[in-house]
Image (cartoon, rainbow, N blue to C red; front, side, top):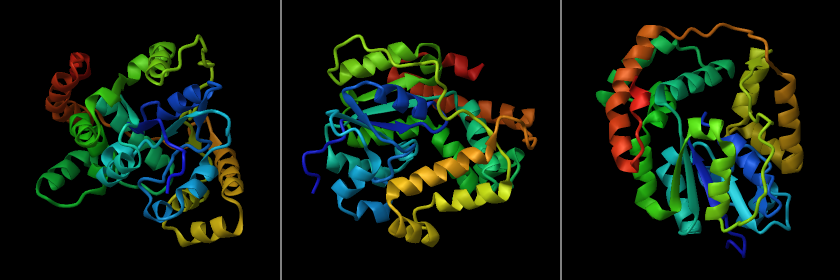
Length: 296
């Protein structure tokens, strides 16, 4: 089914923790074949997963000569189904998991979704959504913004399917302050022993604001693989052409100028700091890295 192609390393998250930048840095290496899209959706998208893997693979990759294959999906770390599928595909796949101080990650994720045009709930509703989750009630805001910051739970899920020796955890602040060191460690783990240094001056996936909310809302719907319009378009035009057009429209609709004020209240920030503290301590014990600065 999978021919002779094997993904050697998968960046599984966390969302809003520099995963796109890391993917692009690694992909600069001449021996590494990195995907051309932001996300490799095969393992979490049921429709795509039921297709021939080699056809899907060719949609995501251009560099046919590079032998080391790297993929990235920033939401895979919260998908047990996706991790299980990746395990079945390649039990020895190396895993990279970047973790970011949970409150700042939550805020960044919230702002991204508000900018996409569909999310109308205020940030101050998060404490209520957490309480709702504790009572067993479904909460989309909890799933999107809180669950993805509970790294100790996320990491234990990863360890359920992958050997700890094949899982590398990096701090987002280390990636920002010393990208070269992080990349060199990953190169070494991939048995790439040379002095190649990526161009770290380029900022990938830089935060921006939406010019037209209605257009962004439409693009958001088209990112959903279950969207009927998207499925029809992908049948009519080549997948890579579709990606090019969506990315082109996306860039046209983005600006660095603030187009709407997103309110992040201090009371909710303090609540989240307190909420995440226990999980941060458990994570620190699990990975052996001092995370006390996250709780200040």
